[in-house]
Length: 497
Image 1 (cartoon, rainbow, N blue to C red):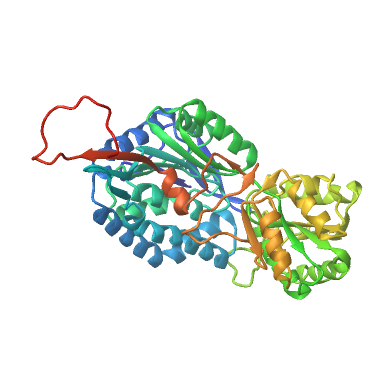
Image 2 (cartoon, rainbow, N blue to C red; image 1 turned 90 degrees about the horizontal axis):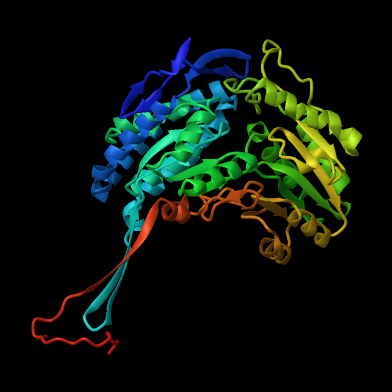
């Protein structure tokens, strides 16, 4: 059985712990690989290599860094199909979705390729007599990233390209459920010319995570995952004097106003709720139907949901693949089976779904729940699967109060033809990312990604300008070069004359 290894100091490293985690093909339910779990010593070795590489890498020219990043971008583009195949094989998402993931990661690599522009700094001359003040940004040192299973290539690329472009060195701990994509990214970065130790990958579980959070040579930690773990990451990292950005979970609402194009809204609800089998923090999990739109909208969504093709990710005919594990599949199903007893109407029941020839795969059908009470578990919890709840609201004001009362504030969207209503919504809604007739408003690479409330722990969002600020620290330099004609001694307090 193939073992997925660590990448430390520019080369693959066999695991020494004797502990391994299973890596399944979600479409068959068969364990295809195993991943080595790092010991504390192996995490320390990765951090030590990163620390050793930091001095020379941080002093390298921006021209050298960007040249390597441009080459890395070229290699990623050439190998995007290969990386997408790794994602589909271990995560289960369909190939087109996996290709989209790689493309969105490439956006951040391209942003990193332009780091010279982003690190220009500022200069104010003659703030006082022959006194100039400059502001610059410098790297932090060794930084770490802890990434989730749902985007095994994209989320790491949200982090390490910007971090290393800014002059830091990086230690990545990817999800143990689908670790091959991160390992391949490290191989390609080395092939692009990245010096040994600048990018390291340690596979593992909580033991590896905790060591990164505690290690005195790790200056900052980036995390994407569930809200409970994000809270843990923040508290543990701050306890050990680290800078932290931790992106948590979500319950994203899509508001449909009475004037909306309901066919368009239904199409977009299907895409946003069931794409990637709902395993994404920006998935739409609640549609809020205002006024008398509910019955017609639910009918249109149900009609489309029943026609979705569910199958292996490597089958071009599949619209949606399996979930990541059997346990997660069963947990998602439990929300649907309990919904009716908690007051919801089960319009489409996707539990018990199987694919011919893949009966042991981790498949589940799509589910649609209508008239869901806000007290129901399906509304209150982040399900992270292909379950869409519909909630009714009499008015816009009722709807905005409902959305804003959610403990999460990751993404939200409004569907309407009314520009005034859309403008009001985008200002009044309490969420970090807002779409107007766009159901999944994930920003492009040069804007930052992140939510509010229980969807974000830490002060800065990820990638974009916030990402650059997170991976650097500011320094202000005040200089005075006296004119040779000046002389004498003056013990008075400096003035602005």
